[in-house]
Length: 336
Image (cartoon, rainbow, N blue to C red; front, side, top):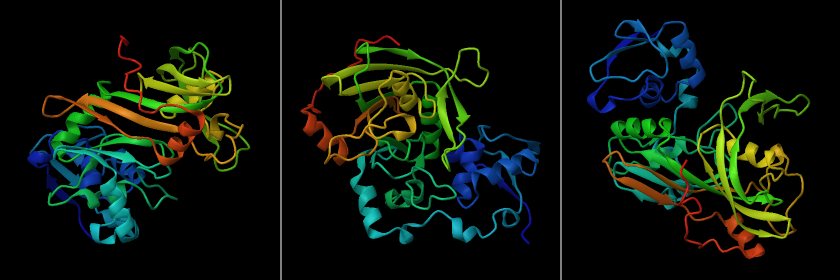
């Protein structure tokens, strides 16, 4: 049985959240188990209890309990090294790079690939980040997430300091994210703003997928404020529409729930009401794409990244005659 360790926070780790510090140092430690260690006081910072979101300073001392008691067969859950990533996955990760300046990296995440692992998810972006390390001593870090079936711009930090600064930008709502979606039906009015709080609710009788995000009343204590701006770019009669979404908050499944609230769920999103299939020959997948992201770069400038549509959405756009090369920013004149 191993003993507890006292580890010093390095200068390059300053600004990291405590949970992300653990993810970096001990990738085999599941998040839920870390939360339990924090709740029971087994993890301490400078001798005191700490929460997952604590921002660390260089030189602080972190008590790490004996992890072999809580991780079980840790080797089976460790993030794969570069050597354990298949050649195809290494190529996929390299081909997904949209931007890399050594400080910030952006990927065009494929649809259907999870960003992080779970009890039933063994293949995911987080497990393949070593394929992007190159000659760097540091492994790239996730700074935000996309749903498994959503494609598009996914931002990574190449250093701990960059990760901390980007995380603060996301938390401070300085990131400007535009999504493209195909909706079943045409939103009315054709552009507007949705303010509708969201909460996670249990949906009895839906098998394994028993939870979903739902719009709740303003007075419901479970609800978290959620706001989305949208604009119809093009449409085909009353049947389908290409809609641009600008989320002003970052709630789980926000765009999917707000699109459903309009009565125009996103194509392929059966969880949120898109029961009607697309015409034969088109993929019945979720049609939601993180098209662009604009955020303050850790070095001080503004970083802007755009991701091309995935194959299934390109085919759908071509089928309906939509022009994905439209250059204008649909929200250029918006004052959030």
